[in-house]
Length: 227
View 1 (cartoon, helix red, strand yellow):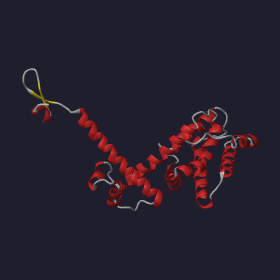
View 2 (cartoon, one colour):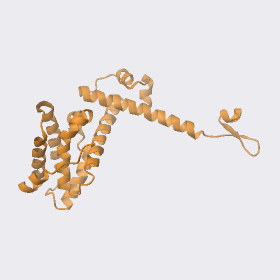
View 3 (cartoon, one colour):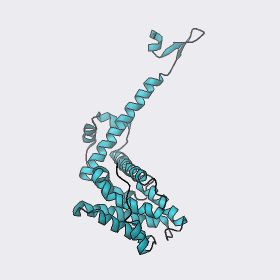
View 4 (cartoon, helix red, strand yellow):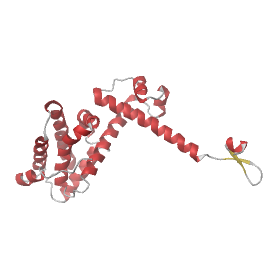
């Protein structure tokens, strides 16, 4: 590489020096930015799961993320924006986990039953995400990311297929979201077993209009194996 190229220029056919963009350097820069942002979000998620509040200082967050204090403002304007991103990130990850585990289920009613039951099983394997869902999930039931839009999608699908007898899917989502968060809240103090998940799934399906026997059958079907 010539001195001109090291300086960011190449020689054109007419002998003029033309500035060029080093794609590999830009790629490294973007990777560093993404790494820093991810570290900040991860630190905020940990704090939320541990304390449930947002009182930590920016300095504390930066130290936990192992990034410079000034790096914070390269990604977020306020602490509130960071914690919003952290909640959205955790809930979206949770939603992706549930989607993956239920990818082979086509019936919306069975899908709802499985998703509700999985909340207790995932609480053991993903305590950080579950804790954030328990503490913050109800505030994000109608958010554009996370579990809310996925559940609303399946409620609409079930309504159109005649599986759910509901008038307003958004209202039904409020009820379902409250049931799931309430189940996690109870689990945090009562150490529930799998039967509690089956009972809640049955109750939700009956609330959505399924008959008792069918709701009970769907709520006790075998679940996908967790990875």
